[in-house]
Amino acid sequence: MTRFDLVTIDAPDTESAVRFWSAVADLHEVEREDVDRWIVLADAAGQRRLGIQRGPARLGSMHLDLACEVDEFDGELTRVVALGARLLAPPRHEPYGSIANLCDPDGNLFDLCAYH
Image 1 (cartoon, helix red, strand yellow):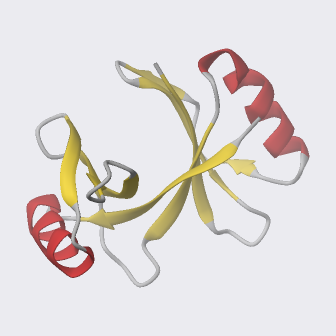
Image 2 (tube, helix red, strand yellow):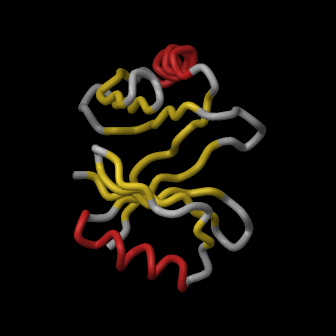
């Protein structure tokens, strides 16, 4: 079953965004992929709270990350598309897991992720 995972901020300069959001929300880095493409910030208890992803910043350039188990990915992708989501690109299979970029019926972006 799909569950809420993170709010992700798209930023052209992830290092600057990490410094800003870490200070604003008292968070610290707990995960990093591809040097600076994807960075996760957590609270003092280690709970993942915010994702910073390299990408163009524009008004409203945040999206939800939803997560499911690896063996549920294909079924969950089919389910959310049947509910009205639109797949924006073919799903990717990265070293950390699978990801699908989607939007809801109103065009709001979200990702479906299955982490290894």
